[in-house]
Image 1 (cartoon, rainbow, N blue to C red):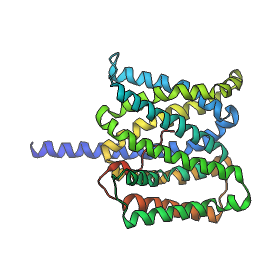
Image 2: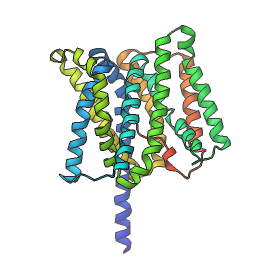
Image 3: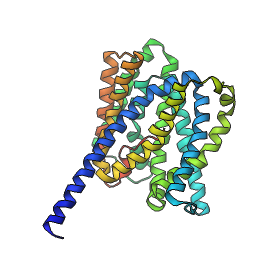
Image 4: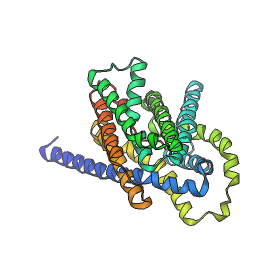
Length: 320
């Protein structure tokens, strides 16, 4: 390779890295705003109605992506892989997305974004439980700090008797743990079958039970009366934020690397908070802001002081 060719390759790599950084920052804005968008949609459709229409749309998007990528020759998977992808679909969509939807509805946009940002802590604990990663002093301290931050963050709701909002936050914590399990369990299949195959098959397998369970709520919605704004918000949340967002985030990680990209996820709660403050008038006490800062610091400490052997511990993209 000549010096000119090498310099050209470095320039192209630098351009791709800058493009990936800008794409990641735009995606953080999209995801941060999505919490407020979803809460508005839930007021019009109900959480169950949103899940119903979401999982009518998602399989269509997954099918179109498979056809675009592979034509009519979709990837073949073994019976054991099919059952594994079914489990991933149930965990990632029925359990994680289902719980996240109701958690966001019961809680607030800022609280939802912060609680879901605790996902890397659960990923670390799951990896340790499976014997894949040892807990360092820094990671243990980070988990402890994050727990203290969550308690401080939720203190105004607990002392104020806002039990529905507090229950919503607890549901979101459980949902975050399910997505962490999904992240760890999906990694070997993504390495072997490819990210698009795993994502689309998990969507196809996981959609049917969600549609079946949300059918009563879906039938209760007067779809002819749904406004254009609600349909636009639904498209934004389902296609742009969730489906295309996952694909863009995967490309960003491939170009920039997981390690340099993961810290950008900690921008999402501040973005969600600012959007909710500007659009919905959500207000934050000093205790809430302090709790959010402590929580994010603890999550970052736990994430970046743990063993670097397994990149699955890095902050993943949310599937919701």
